[in-house]
Image (tube, rainbow, N blue to C red):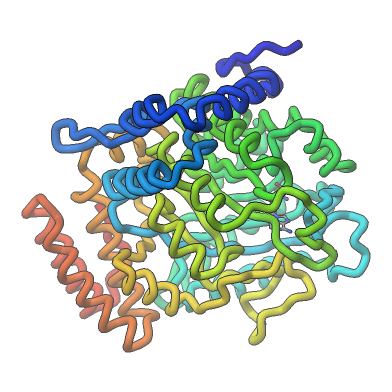
Length: 482
Ligand code: SAM
């Protein structure tokens, strides 16, 4: 039987089934152990250090005890600490992005995804470079600066060269004052060489959802196609890092398997990356299975309610305090509002999950990957965030300034975020307000910028940020950053 070893490069050793089962048994045995729970909560709290803060994070065993705990006041405490951590490291900024679907051709047989090969009635479509350009212009006209590109796995229709061409096209579109400054990539597991090429093309984060860490279920849910190979899929992030990508994004598709198992696997994956590469995941996404063309989410037995979902997000926040957390428009406004309080740092807005969807007047459904629950415009999402005390940020500075991997994490820990990310968020929000916002959003936004500028500790940074914001208001100068 495979032995648990977080430093191993073998999937079955760093995501070790026996270790997960023992963790779940330990969590179940201790879910009412108040003394232990209090000690774990205490360990998770942010501690002041110099100008900044540090956070110890939690092991997968500790975090699993919290997830198993059902004592209402302890859960409330988890939520409070999750919010404290978020405010300590990410402040009240929320990074905005949109997915861009390039192609829904796919040779895999994933049972939860409508792009699966056997689905003969979904319209198959792949964007030409002209169509990519048109989609990007539509996204720029909304105000987006950061995209996550999405494609099915198909070596004939969507080879790596096609993906690289698309990235090149996207970065090359400069429409009015718009540009896309960070392209994250969510494509199937690939080779070290291909990861190297993606890195050279200037991508931000490489995102790949594990879907499920439970090997047996994984094999059943991915019966055919290259994605059937559990080990190849699970070891993808190590290959990505070997190829030079040091910002990687993990995720589980909640609903497929028992959430406690998935949670332990996810935290173990983060521990593995830290142990082997010295840097944990840049982001963790928390998608839930949704209705789609020929997919009924009730086919899967492990759907989770909103309360459990919120608890999972809070426990992730406590376990991996420096990792960004993403929630997409799969979730409703109400659920997104809840999750924002327990640690989410990035949201998508005005997403269309269909190939070519942004250039259509009406939201098209014929090539959609899943139903979108939050169908508000970007302007509405931006306004809502501000009304609920968040700064919508279109910042993409870090990776462009080389602050990736552990360099980003050090920034996070150093307390310099208020002198760096905060002004960057305000300057990019100012761009949004001048170039794209409605009058109502603009009014709220300028008020927010005025107040938030005061929170920048360093006097010279505050002055430069204010000058840049004035330049954005009164001229076409854009893209300032610290
Ligand atoms: N094809 C790539 C791969 O194999 O990893 C990734 C791109 S896919 C467009 C992005 C993600 O959408 C998948 O990893 C999966 O987790 C998610 N997804 C698929 N079907 C879904 C559904 N019915 N509801 C919600 N999310 C879904």
